[in-house]
Length: 307
Length: 144
Image (cartoon, rainbow over all chains, first blue to last red; front, side, top):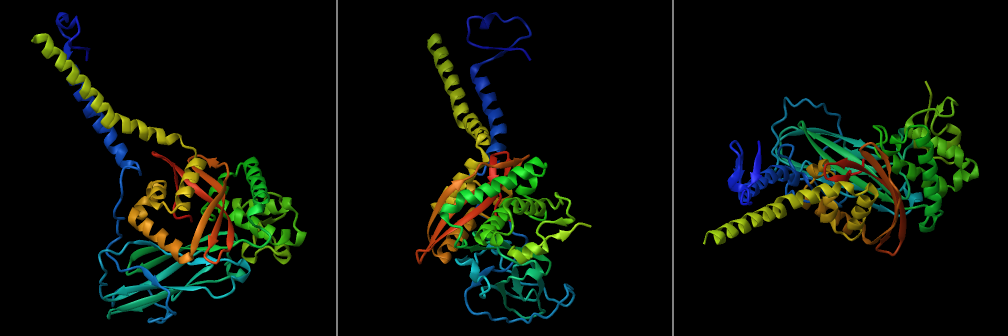
C-alpha cells in the first residue's frame, strides 16, 4: 500500500491511487500493533506481575509437617495401587500439588549418622491408597506405601536421612543436598522438595575457596577438552553436575586428598568419568574405583566396571 | 481558525504517537533488553535477593516452569519458613564464578557463608543451573 503523511505542503497534491493517512491514524495503527505485540510478551515476562496461585493437580489435602515425634497411624504394610475397594478421597481445594519444606541444617558433616527425622502430616477424609517415591537414595520416607480404605484420618510420614554406601545413599558436605519426594495418592501426584544443608569439613572453610574452585576449573577444562562440558551442567543421572562436582571436591579436600593417596589429576579424572559416564583413561572402570573407597572416597560414589 | 485547528490536530496526533510509544513500545523494548544479562549476573542477582530475604525479587528470576510449579506467595512463605527454622542469622555471598554454558543451559558455581543462631559459620560451595528463556537467563528452581 502506498501512503504518505497528511498535513504537509504536498498533501493536497497527491496523485490518484495514493491513500491519505493522517498522523492520528498512524498513531492509532501503531497503538494497535504495539498492543498485539507487547501484550503476550509482557504476559510471558516474570516481571510482569504476580502469579497468585499455582495450578493444582486436582483437588488435594494439606501438605504440612509437624516437628512432633514420629507417630505412624498407618502401618507400613505393602499395598498395591489397586483402587477398586477404596472410597473416593475427600481433599481440601486449597492444597498445592507442590510443596517445599526444609530438613534444616546439619552443621557437622562428620555427624551425619545421627538420626535426622521430620514428619509430614496429611489430613485426609475418605479412603486413600498411595505410595511415596524418594530420590536421591539418602532420603528415606517411612512408610513408603499405605492404605486407609474408608475412614478419615491423618497420615504421617517420617522422612529420615540415611547414609548407606550399599544403597548408594550419601550426603555431600559443604552444600545443600536437595531431596525430592513424589507422593502418589489415589492416582494424584504431589511433589515435595526437601533440602538439607550440610556444613563444611574442618579443613575446607571460607579461605579455601581458591583450592576448591581450582579443582573445579580443572574438571571444567577437562570436560570441555573432551567435548562433554554439558555433563557438568546436567544429565539425566546427575541433573546438577556442577553441584555434585563441588560436593566431591569439598569431600576430597576435607579428607586431606583421601589421606594424600589420590593425586589431584586422578581425582579430577574420576569426577569427569562419573559425570560423563565414560571411561576416559581406558582402565575398564567408570569413576571412583573400589580402592579409592578404601582410601577415603565416599562409598556411595563408587563407579562401575565398563561392560 | 483553520490553521489553529490544523495545529491542534497535529499536536494531538503527535501526543498520541508518543503516548503509544511510552505505554506499549517502551515496555517491549525493556523486555527485549532483559535477554542480554549474563547467566552469572542473573545468578548473582538471585543470590543477593535470597541473601537479603527479598524472595519476591528472587521469584522474578526463576524460570517460567519453576513459576508454574510454585506461586509467588508460596515461594516467599516457604523460603521464609525455611530460613526461620534453620535459624539463619546471616548469609554472605563470597564469590560467583564465570558460567559454563552449553546451548541454552548454563551452570554457575558460587561460594556462600551462612551463620546460624549459635554463631557458627558454614562455608557452602554450590552450583545452580540456568535456562535461557524468552525473558533471558533464568534460574531452575528447585535444584534437582
